[in-house]
Image (cartoon, rainbow, N blue to C red; front, side):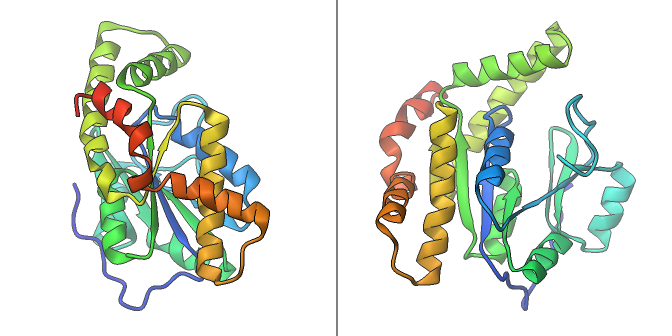
Length: 243
């Protein structure tokens, strides 16, 4: 179910809204976790979902886990900024996350899929959008299999699910042109550095102040991740997915 989200003619953020999207298994959660440990005044919006928690996940930390009836009740009451159905489960970002962050004067980070990101960009065009790519289709398949082993075992049914996720990843990657920044998560430390540089560059750019020499290096790194500057790194990834 992916109905129309409410409009917010008077809605604004005290800070910057960052959107990060990636195919399942691309390492996005690890990137976000490390980013939050490095960057101050960046609030993370915990999404709602109807999917079952993984072994390592806790209620209200990774997600607000809920049932379909409760989620649909929130949809009916226009309580979501965005929501979508992915792999048979609902995901959504509560409007309250925006308002809470505005009250705190912080920036907000949304970890959402391409459907949700499109909804948010339509309502808040000033949002900064970042797409995280896996190094290749083969690397993504390996990550998904390793995650399945950690959570249990690889079965014929698991393989079908992984193949479905790889196909879904391809359909998501096609949307990379809708994002301002592209990261290829092949070296984790570099991807974290790039992500932090994007946050810093956007903050400095919107503050209007002069950047220091050290900050200019971060700005240059962020600029290298802009979609039009990242094609050399991106092309091998696209080719591996047949794009």
